[in-house]
Length: 155
Image (cartoon, rainbow, N blue to C red; front, top):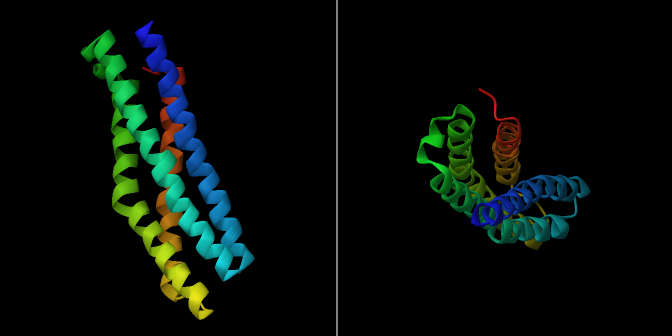
């Protein structure tokens, strides 16, 4: 019973986590394409809030429920390649988010706010946005790989 509850929470955390990452990219690109500095500033601030509300709890939920489920079944399960690789990849995603994405989002929010106030975006915004897009793409694709590993459990 406990395992099934944890599994349900694990799947819910995955949906929240991946869903937020995919929708963030959509709204950010849409805002940037609009060229409206107020809209860009509001969107980057909202994306930062959404990350705190969904990405952080999503990663935490995945790690907590995943490790708990492994503990309930057998710690030797980490020897299964699909599970070990999935665990390592989610750690990589968490590090990418903390070390690259979050600082770039904060920078974009600050620069876009300044741009909305002055009427022009600093070129540093484009650089931060490019880094966010590159590392965000990686941080979005890795959970999709993890999802495939969790579903198909190869090798």
